[in-house]
Length: 252
Image 1 (tube, rainbow, N blue to C red):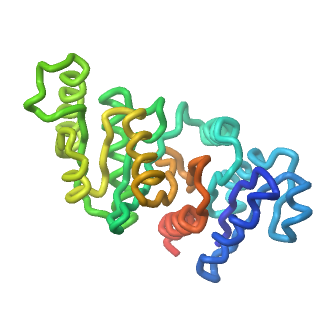
Image 2 (image 1 turned 45 degrees about the vertical axis):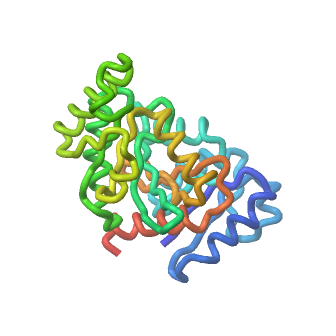
């Protein structure tokens, strides 16, 4: 199995190699980088003037089994992936781990995602399948901006709770109100009220709360692609996640 990862500069390579070294021996990692970075990286580097395009091309043409964005620019890499896979937008679901080891999927995590009930229901459908592949609990918790007792305090809160109730009913989930701590106890997939809230949950857990981010698989395309945060300094986890999902996809 071959997993590709994007490398923006030669300075990123040591961290990438450290992550690759933590994988099972049967997983080979190919580093997609510019020629100057490849000169310092050795034979496992794939040099290109446009490593984002090279990574996406090799993924969709099945020359590699999975891809991790790594430190390549998000806007260009994701735009190329969207165009190559023929979708209007990419839906990402983040695999997070609390400081005590509990794992759950969180969506939406892009600030422009999850603003309508229809988008939330789609994320539930695809996120539930991802949870199944990762052996996470099957329950889906849909969050809103308050408790039911907060109805009437602000129109935005009321609208958030109405959307969450409807999304939970249509997606066969549970409206957990604002109680994320209870949602994580019983659900393998948690749906935030919107992309801003999801991004704040992600950043608070990972960068302030001692948790870990395993990466965010794109769920509405066929190939296995793991998006990563620009602030991440750990690549063993997303590489391992990419390999695991590729193995499930190919029944290896």
